[in-house]
Length: 383
Length: 193
Image 1 (cartoon, rainbow over the protein chains, first blue to last red):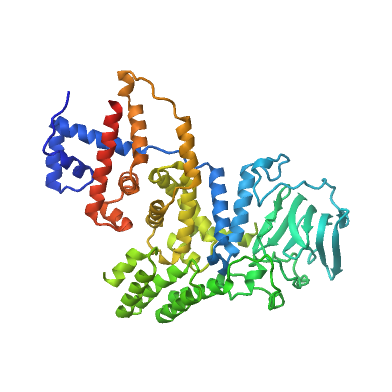
Image 2 (cartoon, rainbow over the protein chains, first blue to last red; image 1 turned 90 degrees about the vertical axis):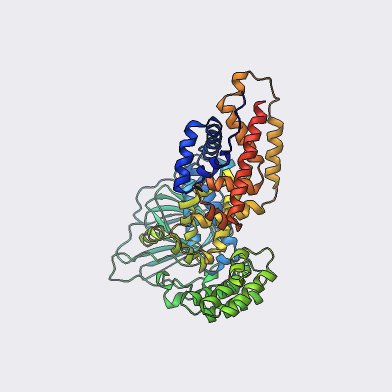
């Protein structure tokens, strides 16, 4: 049987969407109780809503971590990341470790090669050893390394191959460090394996105790049974830097804070300086050599953009606008050029230069046909 | 993880969305992970509904966060970044191209689809079937109609909020919503016949 249409049928949708005033709403609600046609319409609309709201399978924690890892990896490839990738490097590795932990790879002997993540991979652990009375280094056949010792500071520089290291309990003030050109491993435990290739870290597996690895701007402790493997492109080669000798008065030197990748450190410190760790003067990289595997992004562009943003942040809107304009002119192909052009208008508006802000917004609209901020720019332009 | 690193991560995770976006705008991408943890599922659920193919969802979610990171400086400082992220996701859904993955998924679905079989009257009127009909019809809606429908019905956004995100008059929002619902009801009616 067909239900005849009701003249009030169009109001059912308005009621559902909250477009009726209080009086109309009350009237329509009473009408719905007695009108079969409108009741049917209301049920059909509700059914549509239910289908749209029907629960969708949430991402599993593993899927979440994988997506997070992929996001952070891609984010580091953005030009914007070049200003400071310390945080994301750390997060990237943390995410990688989380993915690995989620799949039961860290500390486990079972591997799943088909789904092995790129960053964290299982390393074969060195044989478990009794607590060492003396420090020993057991190199692989192809290992190349140097061991220097002075004033309680042991530094092993590994160029290639694998090194099984056992370290006797360190006395107060003693330090033991394994170094490659791009990483430092501070020993906190007894036995671990470190692998390098062409001077660069490949991976670490810890059998006893723990080690602290400082790599590509992050610092993390790998516990007993844990392992970690470096990405091939996560860090630029580092310049070897002097390691401060141990402080005789300290029972144990504090671990060095996370450091930015060496290739990035040449840029001025980003705005969050108070939270950035400070380097000893001797660690300053004043003239890093060209880094063949450094990120393809252009640090000058990131620096200029960050400086412009800092100017805006401290209220220097005119200065910021000028810097943004310079950025846009100098780097027209940069993904942030769209942002820079739009922010010029915002900066001028905040500086009280309404006419100039309108002109900037119109320029943006004229030149950025696919711009991400056209709607906002139109408002500023007054069009 | 060193104690300092732990503290830093904790501090970051306690920051507001606005503070995280400010840090990202200044070039520190670390807080992007925190934002992702906070809002990934919400954005994903939106995209699963707003994009016609689930095959696109993961890519779109990634692109949403990457685009949001690029546009961090324009975040307006509101307490939650969700409307901002949804706005970005909407633009990406609108601009997306038919990816190979999506095409592949469509072809797979086409190949795997069972041949229609005669239905009993009881089957025809089942709610499950109606739900299937509706789901399929939602996927066939135009992007503009589907986006409005999802933003109103799932996000619970007002017409004004939707209009702001889509940069259209409020009247257009209501018109598209009405058209979307009418199309869905017609599809269900046709499917039942």
